[in-house]
Length: 277
Ligand SMILES: [Ca+2]
Ligand SMILES: [Ca+2]
Image (cartoon, rainbow, N blue to C red; front, side, top):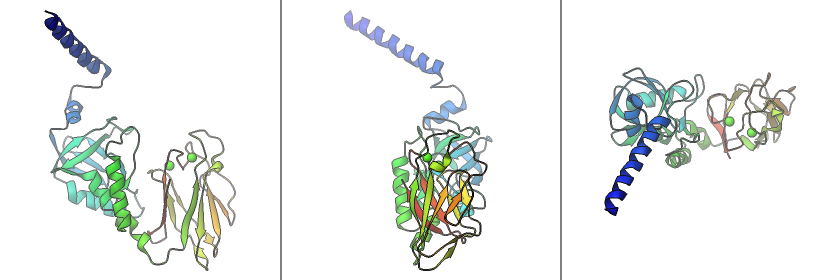
């Protein structure tokens, strides 16, 4: 009798918990619901770039945990071509993490094709970087490993790191500007150093963080032999040794206090140096 009571009680608890999940939206009915469980196959009918595709039903998918460079930046086309060769016209299985959509309404997903994780493949090729955004970091340890492998083998965007002579390096990133306040963004900066005995022109060099939105293109600036140059994240008056990233300043700072990656590309689009913290 006691066993029967206990069993009935357990069933009520389970029913109560499941209905709670439905009410709170953790489990929703409809298309997304199926995707959460990841069993149905979807056809990819368009590839927009290295990390965004479109399904047959018109839904846009943004690959989770990775980032490729933006239009007109180095390796953007290569990343798009690589992605296209992998998935265009193919049937894939989508796996979601904690958040289902980004602010543009795109579905955030891990994309599986025949047991291969496409997000990881693109990082492995060196054409995307590993960018974990909380709380969607389920496979980030795999992506970090893939990036390390690509970097060590100088694949894709990393090929510049195998160049014989690399004069300009990122000496340091000072990340110490807190959060989203519109206060003094000049409390953070990046420090470049020329290790060669001759001046280097930084004209058309590109510096970016690991996001899609923050990048800086140098004008006709020379970095003198064995000299340093500081690029501040805020607004100010440029001089020989000090440059300013944002005039007028935008809402966000550049160097995330929680961790970030800095990429410096030369005028040919080769990676001159990389710095992570
Ligand atoms: Ca910061
Ligand atoms: Ca950043």
